[in-house]
Length: 186
Image (cartoon, rainbow, N blue to C red; front, side, top):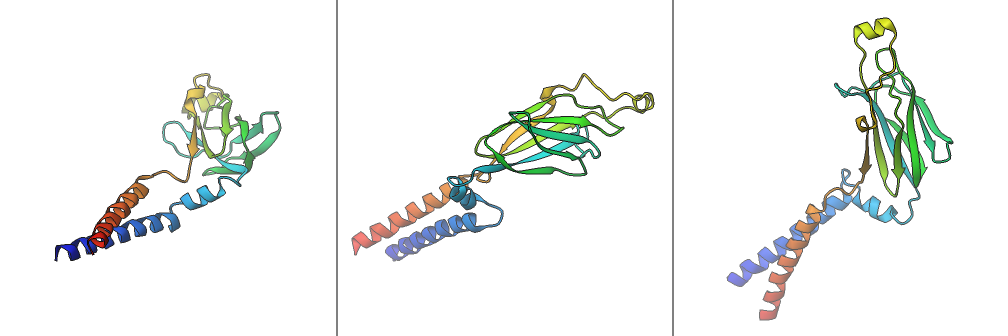
C-alpha cells in the first residue's frame, strides 16, 4: 500500500515537473527557448526607445529623436508619436540618442543618452519636463535642469525567471528518487 502511494506520488511529481518545463518552454509569454536557440546565431538586436513626460509618464508626440552609431552615422531618426519606437537590426556596439526638437509644451532635453547593444535588446527612455503656461507664452524651450540621470537604459531579456525551471527540476528529481527506490525494492 505505501509502495503504491510512493509510486503515484513519484509519477505525479515527475509529471508536474515535465508539464511546468513544457509550459514555460512553449508558452507564448516566455521566449526562453527562442532566446537560447538564437543566442549563438543572433547577430543583431533591437532597441525600444520612448520619450515620456517626467512627471506623468505619458508619451510625448511631435518631437524629433535621432540615434547614431559610435562613428556618428545616423542609424534612425523619427518624429515621436504616442508610444514607443522600435529600432531593428542593431549590431553590438555603442549608440547615442539625442532629441533635436520638441513640441511646444515641453522643454527640449539637450542630453545625449549613450547606450550599448551587447548581446541583448535594449529599452531606452528619455524624459521631458512640461512647460508652464507662462513659459509656453514666453517661448521658453530649453531647460538646463534636465540631466543625464533623467534617462534610463535597461537590458531586456526574454528569460527573466529561472524559478519555474528550478521547481521542475526538484519535482523531477524527487519523483525520480521515489520511483527508483520502488524499482530497487522490486
